[in-house]
Length: 224
Image 1 (cartoon, rainbow, N blue to C red):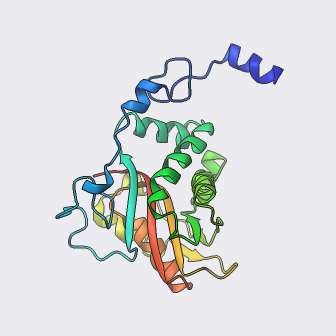
Image 2 (cartoon, rainbow, N blue to C red):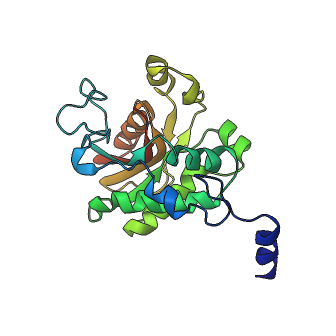
Image 3 (tube, rainbow, N blue to C red):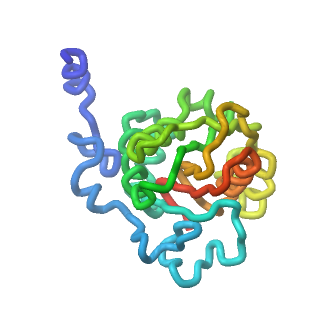
């Protein structure tokens, strides 16, 4: 307690959105979060304003049945994710995970397990922690279901540097099932960001092949 108080005095907590000292995410930045209204979003991929015709996935047939996203990949949500993943502000994992847990609460009675997208070994070494595992743990707690690390990464390239076609090719064999406990029929797959959906599609296909009957997905942010 004394140490944490001293640390706060020397290095005060700053808002992940505006960098002002105080809360991890101040009230003004909370109000500015680019949240996606589910009733207007695509029910398949979670893209904003895709409830009638989704320009993001209307030609696709992803392996996952449905998707929800907390918000669009824009400030201040994008900055929260960046600080969490790339600047080591691990406390944001709890904040972001709880946001996704609340959003996925629309399916509260549906999931029987939560599975996080696993980081590659390169990303795990670079960051020093499993960022999606933390998020998945918070979502599982919110929904009252077990967290299952049912996937392993085979080491695909960083998707952020790739275009749409390259992303899909890059993740074709990016995941394998870990072969642990049997998967339940209904699985919620979680990740931090969905861009084209290629990563979640590939991972969902592996979960289905490993025994899941239906996979839905949830992410913190939707790039579009």
